[in-house]
Image 1 (tube, each protein chain N blue to C red):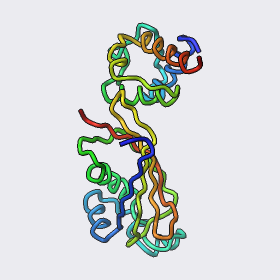
Image 2 (spheres, chains in turn red, purple; image 1 turned 90 degrees about the vertical axis):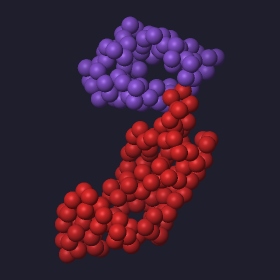
Image 3 (spheres, rainbow over the protein chains, first blue to last red; image 1 turned 60 degrees about the vertical axis):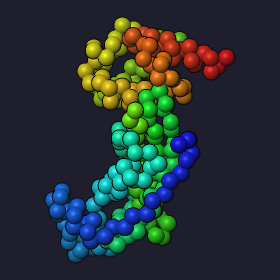
Length: 130
Length: 84
């Protein structure tokens, strides 16, 4: 892998993902579970948990990169727009830094929804295990 | 940029990465002297230093450093080489 290499991966916020997240992490805040509450706060419906996207990033690093011996060192994400049930998201990631001295790669990434809006972006650092 | 100026910037990077305002590095400082300077944070420190100073080290260089002073000397040499 080299500087500037780009990767894309498609994801979908399905009921299985949403209910699985709630079942595991128990965040049943009204914003995520009560449509009327979410609409009263200016959203179109229940807002999906932003940290579902962190799960997608975990899958990307663990399963989609061309190498398997990887570990996430750090991850930063900014949520720019809400994500809703059924949204199809495209993760676009680019290698923005290579640190051979310590076996680390840095990625810049963004998630785009189907209308091309960036809903989240950030950076993650991945270690390559020797 | 001399080793002392490099040390000041490196100290700031240590404070930021290790989230510890109390860190005051000296040339003799080693990982054993700084709380939380473990192997994982060592990676973050090196990445932070490489990004801040826009330099690249080799793994052999890093392993050769016995203390912060040697690291800053190597860093200052790299910066001089870049600007020459």
